[in-house]
Image (tube, one colour):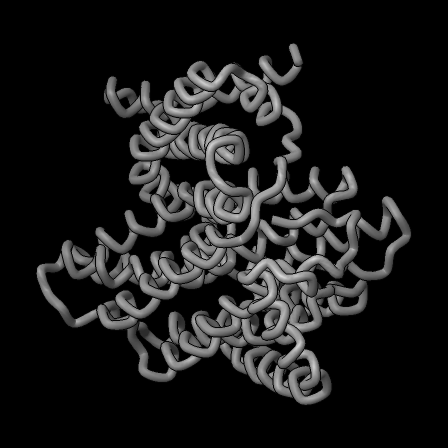
Length: 406
């Protein structure tokens, strides 16, 4: 328990530079300032993740899983919305908003999903991560929004009506998971320490952690976003690359770590469920939030328009999402499938050219179509599991008991 207390205190300390630098107006230099603001965001994300996990003691477990996923990526939302706001004043920032959004989404599927399968295989020798049938809600929800978002790159913009549709989809998803029957949560680490507190003390602690972390993120998001661009110029690194990969990697590192720890402790299914939920909220609220913030900042209603590079990035991300949905239609992810996700993602990471992006977009879509046709019998099965989970009928429980569920 002492080590858990130390971790909480340490993250509170590491989250403080963002607040201190912003309030005092102190400047140590572009690169050091950016590093400190980034550190504050990472530390705040850990605090948010622990608090959200401990909140399972207060709300249904299904809703808590979605809540954990949402809270864990709030730092990325803050950075991305900062770019969207600036784009309303200066169109050059639009590319960075899209870069951060697509980078975060592709990292989640291309790196985090395979990581869980590899950890599970290393720990247990299992050649596939099997999800419980209750996670049909995440898979069906992701499939629905993935199909909708596929049209966005072809029209070359993210419009306000897209925001309405995607926000509504997220609200429906949250309503669905809130209906999933709850079980006693299995908390680990600092979250377990918080969850074990008496109710009043726990609620005060949770409130304090949420408020403190939120303040640190709000103080750090804008200077971190600006600092990435200026740091890229100073260090001779492509600003687009820094925003697309470094910012999401920093903001999503706690989520990766939490999911990895769950997999290491034999709860890979729960970790994968959280990552699935995170993908749903990023592919709904994160995308939908961009045109809203842009419209408020610019004072117009024309939506966020995409240039050629942005269109390619969104197309590639949408195609990767379709492939990922096809892969998990069976509510499992094998070593081979995880390897394919990682390999294809690595190609776009190390070969960032137009030709590679367009080629791999086609590969993703062809593979997705092939898998859906090959496993078309899984579609009625997962829809039955979706219905059974909501109705709390026995089919929803005919699963691997060791993997855990909502």
